Image (cartoon, rainbow, N blue to C red; front, side):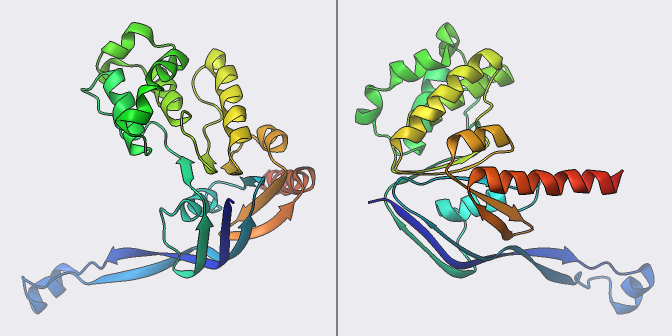
Amino acid sequence: MAHLRLEHVGLDFHVRTHGRISLKEYILKGMFRTRSSTSTVVRALDDISLDFGEGDRVGIIGHNGAGKSTLLKVLAGIYEPTHGQRAVEGKIASLFDITLGFEPEASGWENIAFRSYFQGETPRTLKSKMEAIAEFSELGDFLNMPVRYYSAGMCVRLAFSIATAIETEILIVDEVLSAGDLAFQHKARKRIEELLARARVVVLVSHDLGSVAALCERVIWMDHGHIRLQGPPAQVIAAYQAMATAGERLAA
């Protein structure tokens, strides 16, 4: 059974700043005086308690800097909580920056292997998936070329094709619903829907509120590291949009 739980989780980042000294202080206190440094604590997440169980499809929304992606990285185990507890049952796969880590001098075929191994595949398990990944990417003979010759769109196609070939129980997704050009986006959306259908637990972040409403059964609204509201998609998205509209009126 797949299960993911956070209990009163907080996450602090320590930002180090260096103090400056004047020329007078430099001369009077010694030319070899080391610069002082201080550390500022930034609370990225504060008292987050969430429970994701079998069959959950949960979307996370909020403004830029609200803590959405940070929360996903705590859920995925990339960040360890500073406070509180994280508990997980089941295999987790995460789709974050899907183009990160390509080897520019290696061919498309070689990068399929590199990235797939990074995602937990083995030579045996990858063998049956290579052709399907290549076919979905629609890159054809370009797969024989070094990736450094690819356009940005081609890189996204290849990365998305590799990243969504995974099999998992808990799927964590950050803004990969708009991969590639318009023609490829239709395929990408269908592929994501198939992946969501296979996973037992899905948590996704997206600024595309329509996709969140269509794909999720519960929505969490993050605001400055806190959970501002969670519940049915229609209710939470409407409240978020009302707040955003009110903010735009005040700014005007």
